[in-house]
Amino acid sequence: MATSNEDEIAVAQAGDTLRKIATRHGTTYQELAEYNHITNANRIYIGQRLRIPKPREVGVIKFRLFDLIGEAIEGLECKVISLGQEIVRIKTDAKGALPDIKAKDALDTFELWVKRFGANEFKKVGEVKGGTTERIVAVKSGKQKIVANTKPTEEKHVEKIVKGGKAEKSGVSWVAKFPASTDIAMLESEFGKDLKAFIAALEEGGITVRIATTYRPPQRSYLMYWCQKISDGKISAEKVKPFVPEVEGDAPVNIDWTHVDANGKPDLEVAKKAAEEMRGAFGIGTRPVGKPYKSNHNFKKAKAVDMQFIPHWGIGKSVKDKTGNLIEIKERQDLFAVGKSYGVTHWDLRPNKNAIKDDVHWSREGN
Image (cartoon, rainbow, N blue to C red; front, side):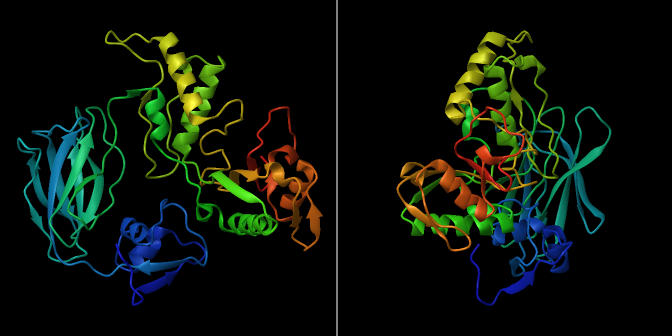
């Protein structure tokens, strides 16, 4: 969605969340995140300036329900609620569709509730606003449970708002899921500011910086951590615990580490080979990987970066530390000292260090 110089601006205050700001301005946190190109709606910082999207024109909502392989779900009982009133309760037709809903106002919110399989209860699976044009909202569901949230979209296309269902076997296909970021803006604001200052000093000194990772989704940390443990033989695949989202809206990881066959039996030899292939594709090697939600690369902390330099360790160059002193880089320890002056600490300088090496990792405290 394009922005305009005439957009209303909201400034995040202490205690604000994206949801609170959105509510104050008559929009949803999903729209606010999309409009401001925020990739994780659970993280904003004090003083952040947010453009408020203008009200949308009235549109038509078409709810359609599909399963995980794209087949229409027929006969699933649903209800749509707006302003606390039930608008319709009906089963999906042969195309997985519910009756069209015409919004009276662009900010009208429609909640979609779906009856759980095998249970006499409904679960809210998301909400969507009136929008500008006819919109299709597709619900992808497994047959056991329905989880996750929706976010609105202004364009006419299928929007997945529910995830879950049959697990996918482990292997290299998982490496492309839950991609990491190289954007410094994804980091905690103060650490990001210090990192930018450190990188600016490096570049001024003639050192090229290559960032590999700033933010890493907790799901990616989960995949990396356990494929390494399985590969090293430190845990058998059938003993790996499922990913448990700790932040509202975080997607599940429907992975089958054990490679269960048609008879329901695990193939642990194939499972270990698949984990080894994942480890190689992730490029982990022997480097340590933090657990999900514990890693400094995850948003609960967001104070870590993986990066490399040309020339290697900047040796032969001179770089200014934070106080302005020009430091000749003769060995890696010299570069470590410069980074620490900016509050960016290399892994080797962390407290309680052990023999494990991670040459690319820098963070606030080194860990």
